[in-house]
Length: 488
Image 1 (cartoon, rainbow, N blue to C red):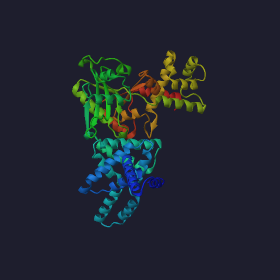
Image 2 (image 1 turned 60 degrees about the horizontal axis):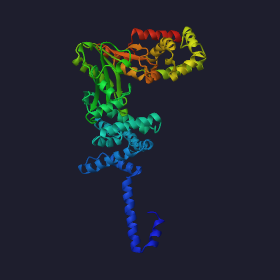
Image 3 (image 1 turned 120 degrees about the vertical axis):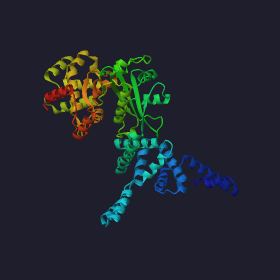
């Protein structure tokens, strides 16, 4: 109680009235504290207590309420408060490393198979973070699994932004990834086709989650689930009504080379399909909807399941291909030009003839001007420049997809995804996506990754084992031209 308030109460009323006022003040304070809820220290104290693996039936209701309280408290934290809370939670409820060291000594000292196995079991148990008990109890709540998925998204954000990058949080990230990989394995997923008759809530979520070609209107989403189009999602029984990964498919008679022909105004959502015109499936957009399921592989399973569905619906369908964006290419290209300018040596990006032709159009220093035009998207406004830049940009893009690596794998995440699935890097398409996003991210270029079903398993194994990229003659020819120009 505020110490300055008590003398004032004694002065203004008699002793009995003052005592009643004090009691009223304390009651109001308790009510206010209950309204605010427990503070972080109190929540952490209760969480540590609740992480003790006691399975007494009499405590079940108490632990359930403590778990609900934890979830309510965490959801009430702001984005700025969560990193600090997670750092304390993982440190106070993680692995007891002192206990681990002690048990390692007991394993080393154990004599005989029985004592050794017993010591190993205790060691394994001690290596399990104590917050696993809390995670298990959260999963028993309604929407508990979704809470854990969102929790991992927060943990990943903390690590990526360095908001709270510490060994304890990294340990939690690995724990959550392993748990979610088991919970969201293919056996627990359900494939659903989305149509115009699907729930409005589901259609709206699919529109919001679309990450490749933004949905413009309800008419647009109606078109994307209508004739000559298919939309499939994976769902999970623990997250009803929540699509986990979304795949959009165009049904055509050839392998598409332009995004606008797919996401444009045709075909009309009212026309009927002509089965004889459907020989090819184009996977033109795949979007993971849950950041917390990052690196929990769902998309590759979805494509395989969808291929089976389409083969059942169209037995004569023979061609399966993506029409994929190349996010990051323009940024990589601008960085490559900057490195070339700093290097100060002979231009290894453009041939002499290309440099001369570009300079005649733009004037000024070729590389510096080209970098500026690429960053601002101004180059697409000049038809002659678009024509002149086709070969050098296609050559550079082929190298970016085929030659640039991250830990031995393809640097581009979309390329890595399809190559892991066993696809062939089949064709680069010039001016395939002329939307502002397409020009900004990949200079308008798109790529087809083609799935030859009889070879996908072999290609996948070869890529995963040796990082060998199966590519078409067009891709390899462009790569060879780049190597010749760059003297690689």
